Amino acid sequence: MNEKNLSMLCDFYEFTMSNGYFKNGFYKRNVYFDVFFRKVPDNGGFAIAAGLEQVISYIKNLHFSEEDISYLRTKGIFDEQFLEYLRNFKFHGDIYAVPEGTPVFPNEPVMTVRAPAIEAQMIETFVLLSINHQTLIATKANRIVRAAQGRAVLEFGSRRAQGASGAVDGARAAYIGGCAGTACTLTDELYGVPAGGTMAHSWIQMFDSEYDAFKTYCELYPDNPTLLVDTYNTLKSGVPNAIKVFKEVLLPQGKTKCAIRLDSGDISYLSKKARKMLDEAGLTDCTITASNSLDEYLIRDLMMQGAQINTFGVGERLITSSSSPVFGGVYKLVAVEDEGGEIVPKIKVSENTAKITNPHFKKLYRYYDNESGKAIADELCVYDEIVDDKKPRTIFDPLATWKTKTLTDFTAKELLVPVFKGGECVYESPSIKEIADYCAAQLDLLWDEVKRFENPHTYYVDLSKKLYEIKNILLSVYGG
Image 1 (tube, one colour):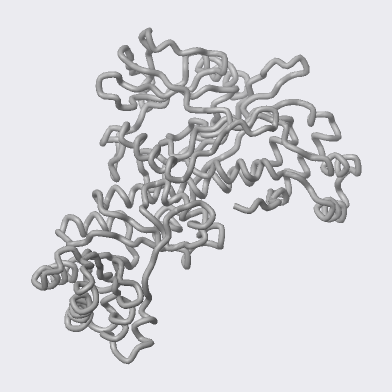
Image 2: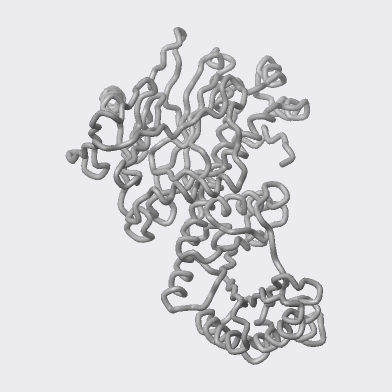
């Protein structure tokens, strides 16, 4: 993707704070921020991390132009030496993140930033908007894909997306979440997400008859054409005309792959009737695609009703995640290095206990049961802790801390990997296909109970004993 300077795409208070850090010398101090979320969209059991590639591109191109500095000067509140500092601004910090496509859970870091205070502060807005948006869409897409029970799901949402980047990056995230392709051509050009599409109702209306429209299209594109059959009357004209054209144009060429698309009406009823008509005509290889305001619940109902659908095209309810349209990822300070380089943990305390943060520079471990291969728990540890999976490990039930679970036959894996070190990118971004395949493989390691749509099992996310004690000390100091 062409790199754009989006350095000014940040909340204005990042500049006021940074100006203050510069004036009092804090800009020389390294700080630690965690990116995490508190609640899974749609009350699901997990989310799917996405958006890292765009963060990497943003960090690499981070700088302030003369026009940017001139604009800030017009505000009349910024120190001239601070503006001069911005003229030579570059990110020098470290970033750790879970790879895109990783299932993630509330209150665990999906990214940790260690950088001088101003640098860490300046990237907050873009980091959050990229990770929040794409994680939201990847998570929604996967719910829809799972509802389709192995049938292909295509992302059709560009025209209903919230802006150009919402369409392009949303389609990318949908592919990570399991969609087979997209209608968004630019996402294919930029990222390699397979784009496709055939016709709208306007194509059919341009011709004197539905038959002529179908015939012309199949003559132009005889390799696996999809005909939209609901412009006039699906069962009386649309499907019969499609059958006629398939037989007249495709079969003489030895081509049997073709499809029809249903975009309105009672999809379940029409698909069953259409399937019967196609089979009776000998077009058993002809598949049926359905679209029109679908989501995971409608698709699940269609499957329960025995709808004869091979592919689903899902638009607005996917690209906007309309049932749960906001992913609440946050960017919170968790530690500061003092003048001697010692890491000092920091905590945010709130009367709303859900908003109390987990302090310190941390590692994130995922534990896998060696017998089943399934993921059984995640644990947040202090950065200098090493988990020995050859020894039993005790974790707490997240809903009842008086209950514990002892792990014995397990494998531990660190989830946060280095992305930037000293301002240089040390992470090689996988291809979009590799990310999608990785996501599918990681989801297979979750128990089905965690993947339920309603009342999913709460996955264990625990604090190590050391981190738990540090948190309690800070709560006793700052909690009143």
